[in-house]
Length: 109
Image (cartoon, rainbow, N blue to C red):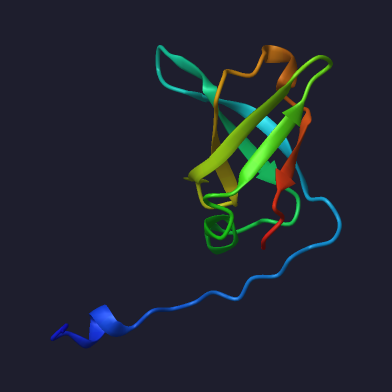
C-alpha cells in the first residue's frame, strides 16, 4: 500500500502514569508588544527542565482552582528552552491566578 518505509514506521513513546498529583506555576500570560492574551498562560512545572520533557506534556489538560471556579486548559506547546509550556484556557484566567499553582490532569510523563 505505502511505498515508503517512513510511512510504515510508528514510534511509541514510553508513558508513565504518576500516582501523585503534578503541580505547575503560572508564570505569566502570553504577551505581545501591545497585547495580552488572558486565555493563554505560560506555566512552569517543577520536574520539567528541557524542551524534550515539555514536548511530552503537549495535549494534556490542566486545571486552575480559584475560590469560586475551576478553569480548565489544554497544553498546546512549549515556550523557550527551559521547559515552560503554553496553556490555552477555555475562558481567560484572572490576574490573581498569576503565581499560583495548576494541577496536571491525567498525569502522563
